[in-house]
Image (cartoon, rainbow, N blue to C red; front, side, top):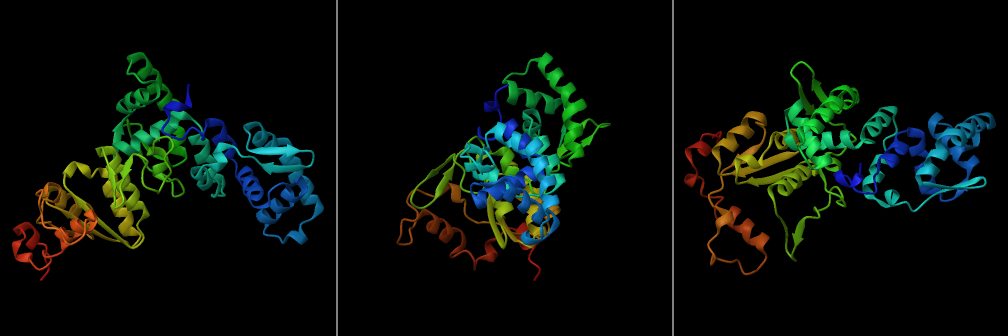
Amino acid sequence: MSEQTTPWPDTVTNTVLEALAHHRRRRVLRILENEGRTSLEDVATRLVAQETGTALLDVTRSDVEEVLGELAALHLPRLTEVGLVDRQDRTVASTEHPALQDPKVESLLQPDTSEWDTVLDCLANEYRRVTLTTLIRNGGMTKRRQLAAEVTAMVHGDDDDDVVESVLHDLHHRHLPKLAEAGLVRYDIDEETVGYEGHPNLDDEWLVAAAGDTPRPILSMADQSKEMWTLRGRENVTERGRALCEQADDELFMMFTLRDTVETACVRRIRDAIDRDVDVYLGTQNRHLRDLVRENAPEVTIWEPQLDWLNLPPNHEKVGVDNPLVMLLREMLGSRLDHLDAQSEDFLEQIPL
């Protein structure tokens, strides 16, 4: 089975994730990133100091010898086999493996708990990664058979009934229980439904970004001009919106034109932003969408734009500059702030005064 079929970048293979699925190996890589090539004794000493909260000068020789034995027998051979570490005689150094140059991998190295070991062990399997990707994109709960069909299509590129049955069997008996145990999914066996739960240290964008994308910056499927970016395709716009919701730490300003642009997962991220004390402002001409947001996130400040800004007349008034973003904001917010009397009854009902 080729890793090319997964939504994760090529540099993050099953073997790399397996190697990272132990907190002590991640600590070794962090030490080597800071220290460069160094002796095995130095790595072992720093590990003991980190794990016991002991000053380097107070680390005992017996503690170092114990850690050295485990490094030599278990962790360094695995890191060397995968190509993440270069070992020569009594010294070691991190390599220029593509995974270590990938900013996505850097975030995987930071969590330092055995709980994170379990999460990475789950991710070190293509079917489980694709399962999580599918659940994130679906939002809410998904029927187990539908999930099996979608996972089969993503991994194998077809929907052969026999293959779907095989995937369904493996999901039920192997993958979903493991993902549920790690807290990544909610699996209702009686209802035969599955929903994405996630993990505080796992960025959802890891699982939905296409190969080569880097979480947080503008998506690679965007077109850039001097003034602004343009995203094409509903899925790309939705995923970028989700990322912006997760990034916001003070204010979040959004406009939506279609109700189905806001999926259940988007509402959940808006809810998460509010829980982080982010002030959320949402504008839409769609009453159903306003009702949906009010029901699920009543703290959101909602307004009704009076301009269909996606269908501006070709010769609309300019403001002295050719910056489309400035023109858009001027049209939306400029002279219309003092025209509340032009709002709909639906909007006026929400004004507390």
